[in-house]
Length: 396
Image (cartoon, rainbow, N blue to C red; front, top):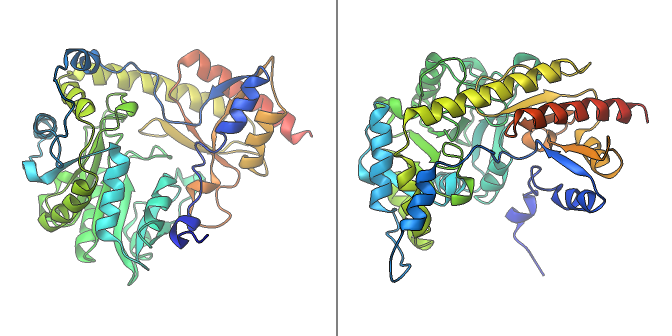
């Protein structure tokens, strides 16, 4: 039987593809320290579960395709506090930030189009682009430069007749890079001058560690036709399983097209939307405490990595990820070896191999992404296992 050429271009997620091997390792009695997936262990605010318990309705009915009005209003209030106002029609509730990204790309990209993304990038972007018949055109970066990319000449050198949009994750996944105000302004200007969409994936906005204010590409009203914002409850409130996000844009034509997809999938889960609306009632003290906890974890990971000979790693400024280049030949093979052949007192470690985070063939082969979303003691043990694993792997 014949399958779509688009789906055949897609790959399995590098973050999840080792799951079967991890299950086998656990059956053999190994304890695995997980650095491979961005699932925080920070508690979800109590307001979410209170709303679920208090929910009462004789029928679990559809809600409106654009989203639950109470949730849209809560999101409007959140942005108003950041100095950005969005009308009700500027906000479309989605099944997580992932659906928001998929819908945005489906509205913008066509067969043969390109979307400009700094690499390394979140690998699911590739799947989303391929299913639109498009592909990612990477903006190259280097581990030695902290994966910095926000240079006008560097960006414009990659724009061509097939470019339709620029997609930026800020703060960055997987690199932890954070754009300055001046860099954001430059990127907005480039998008305007080249008549491109600028998609800001801002899932990690709350997690910046240098005392910066919370920033968004929505702050630039002069680029209302260009800017598309991807947002989500998943990371902000440690509510990944709720699967509630949103697509935001002042571009009326784009949002009208997006509604076609929203209506085709009917609506986002009613109960999850109801509970997520209550999440926006938490105060700044919640975010301050979570931010400080992630900063401690970041500092621990960077310190431990810098103790390993041959590792190249810059201190990330935001999100809860970092990329590191290891002194191994192939991070994918190294990860498989760690699960199948290595342990220290019954313990081993998982990360996300770096090559699938790149569009340029061959790049990232010895790099890994680490998610520092587990508690301090576990992080220390995980990084010790990584050091011991590298030593044993290279002595084979």
